[in-house]
Image 1 (tube, one colour):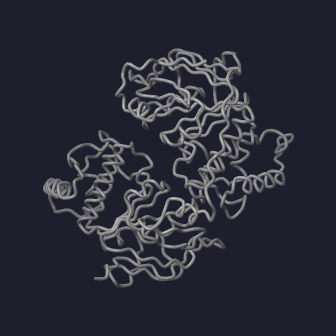
Image 2 (cartoon, rainbow, N blue to C red; image 1 turned 135 degrees about the horizontal axis):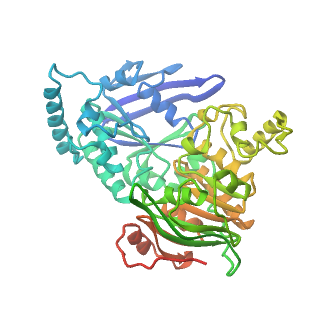
Image 3 (cartoon, rainbow, N blue to C red; image 1 turned 180 degrees about the horizontal axis):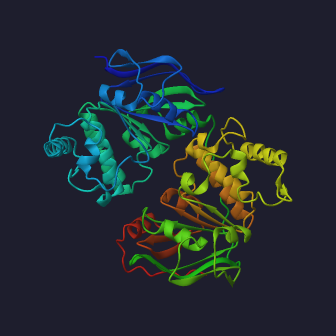
Length: 511
């Protein structure tokens, strides 16, 4: 018996000016399957999903849903038909309850109280049916990230969605939360729901998805059964070549300590954020900080840069205490910074690529003289960095906000490495990036390390920590736990430390 097709695209085209984001895409999604959409940053995945969910309209082609042509003028119209999308950045109001968030914008009866009660009952029924474990009367602000994601899934189910798009659903989840999400997705699949799973993580796609469609440069490269292919095959389809593992050299023993933290303590409104953080990074070394998101990673990077006040402790560069710090001074001292939130803290989205690339150097030569910016040199520099870092963009004058997340990250990395830094603080440097882009970032970081740069790598991706680091420490509830050489690091021990299962591990002071 032939499997029912719930949604199909026929020769779908979407252009932005002269740039073709989707080029005659024809795909078919089956009822009751988990279908992965894989592709490099800028391959056209988000554009396609935005058309399916009503956020964009195609320029050419057709969308068939349940066998008939559809055209959505808004996400509300798509939701009425049974298509829902869970975005990577959740669209919830923290001060409201789960039920209030889920029912927000929907028509209710004359009595708001009756409407709320009815919404709570419906949410409980859906929660039980699909194993979501969602309490409708809890405030969203009290929920973990994984629970908030389940609320977003609940919103789509509450509106009757049979076709659910998940955009990078595991990007902000802990390993236990990923496991719980996969349990929920399997239950949805068993109940006949179709899930489109957008992800860069081949390992997760191999674990949870039935079929995989691969996009490259806006075109469909192919659709394959996950069971009939390998991770290497999928990576090759995605980037058009084999992935090369980064070449690591063994760190030489000895060497001077370039960047140090001694006894950092920080708190806010009586809540402890960092406790007795001490470490040292040698010249030409990567110190990896592993940990589950939300255990003080952001606070640590901000304290080092002077963005977060400290109650005690000191930061040293080449043996000299830095005292009062702020980002401009740290840049002048040769400290590069890749922030966790590229859009909020790393870029000015309305400005062009070329302007963002010189954001830390626009006052000085070769980009400026006597307060006058040399536009020709700014443009030439941008063209060089775009080539060097394989940034997919219409041109150097394009607003950086128009780029995909991974290409925005490449712009940040290019800008920071242009400084030829002696120290780099890298927060989640490959979050949301495809394997090809991540490979590029890893190679650049290792090249900087090999030139003598001292790198503090802070990442929730344990595989990334294990691949790049010379030494590894674990951050848990604002404290640095056991520190180990990469060659001696045991995954089981690191995992237990990340979960706080080894509370008596010694604090590390690294020199």
